[in-house]
Length: 318
Image (cartoon, rainbow, N blue to C red; front, side, top):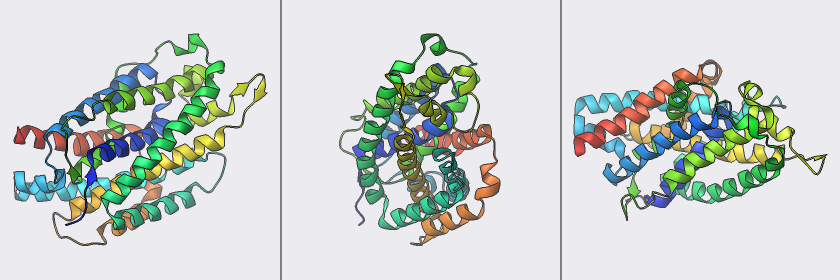
């Protein structure tokens, strides 16, 4: 039997994937709505952590809903591939000043396929290590940015529907709950439910605090633009490479989770060891059109397939 990831590794994987979403897609939203949206996802994740079986959500679908569960697993797998293609386009936001974003997206897809071939446990172990580097890198970026923050820019702006957008997008890493996990203490990793939303809100606050809420709302890479504006003792500091490295690490963790999720869901129809690699090839083929999808549509898909699905299984089991 294949080795399963640990509970703490799953939460570290979830945190690393959420950091990618926050740094690339949520920094144009006011920090208060990011806190509420990502916080809601974190609370839902804690609930799923308590109720989903150690085998993961993927085998629960056919076991709980029969033939309909298998059909829904196939639909969820298709969405996972589409989400994987969308996430591959996030590489452009990690390096907005270069023209090699597409090549980097293909490279990350290849790495995600390789990680999936090694198994979810190996990917989770890698994400556990990378999450430590992400904390350090984002901590350094935030430390350099503190002197440039302006209090008047931190006043909450926007409307409540932005919290729904943040909640939907932050559900993309929730594919880790479809995968098997060794359970030791159900709910014992609750501190992650504080760390994840607070970190995401901090990135949004740093972006708006340096640029202003109006400039922060301009896509595609407001956090990168804020990093270019950071100075220390009157001297401009070039911390963009640190930020690009952190974004790339988070994007890889997110893409690896989606690849493993697609394979786990496809296995409910017919087990095949190359399903993850096929998912990455399909994602590479549709990167162009999927990359033009609006954030709202991606958030809605994540809410339905990675939010509603675990909720229904958890309610059915309880």
